[in-house]
Image (cartoon, rainbow over all chains, first blue to last red; front, top):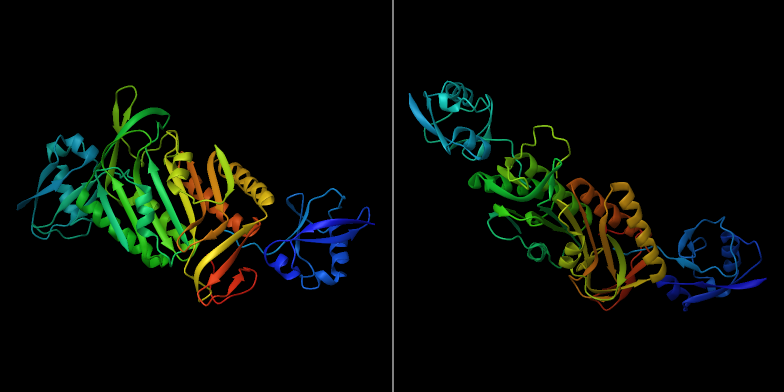
Length: 81
Length: 81
Length: 146
Length: 146
């Protein structure tokens, strides 16, 4: 097991009370595993079960395999423009 | 018979060598009659047979009935914008 | 507000934007037509725009009225310039504002498309070879037009 | 040219227009998003825009690349502002130039539609009753959004 730091923004940061959340992952884990692991954390209880995830500054699918060095973020529904 | 002054613009004015052309009409004549009368004028020989016609600053159909007081113009293909 | 005009001075896009903007609008759309250095493959160094001004003003006003009705846009302005224009100068400026983006974008497109079809304005292109010619969009040319 | 940026200063539409304009273009299209005084029927007196800036810049660049390819537009610029904005201020400015009008208009519309879908920027509305709320376009509200 290692731990990745997941960036939070806007409403998600407000819901968690922090700009980041630490989530444990195993080697070979995918985005879907990260989200499952995250749901078991008490600090993440307010977050939606299936948020959009960005890996290395691009939207990722649930099948994307994660590495410890990846830049990972949860993306709330966007409202720019 | 009376005579109406028809305004010419752009390429049509160049073709006729004048900004206006005088065309005879009868009471009750329509736009189609005006054009037929115009085609018999030597000065109009360079103009197309069926130009777009504006009456009182709006496009008119060939069925529009003309009055001596109308503002009449021939409208070459427009190229504004 | 709604305003249309044939002008014989420079068109200022910032003024058009300021004119349509208001706090109840969330979107402003702008279109500018400018003088291009090429036309139908020929090299251009200027343009004269001439109009049947009285009718052109009426026709522009009718087009704005149609756009206001069709897209529910109330803030809409258009200016078309006549006279001699240099390369890069703005020949037509259109601005629309609306609470939401789609009507603002649609209204501006409608106005420029209708101007191209029915406003009695004509351009005389000046070519770098010294010749001049009236543009006739009804005659097929080598290249699509702006 | 093509340029995208997240900025924390005023957006100047005239600068964007100047940036995309050139003598080989006959058409410039511009879209501005501005802060509106009403949202979902609630009275608004300001807005905070926040971004995942690194990704937002990448995503804007990807959108411009798509627009350039899809519409053959090479002159395209977009700036999105973050921070505190007052009513009427410009939050996003997009400008495109092309030889002809259709690609310039299409490119600008594409860019604003894609920004609304996928650029990680969020707005916190300030209501005149003193409350604040993150805007969530995925939640149905009383009124369509800009």
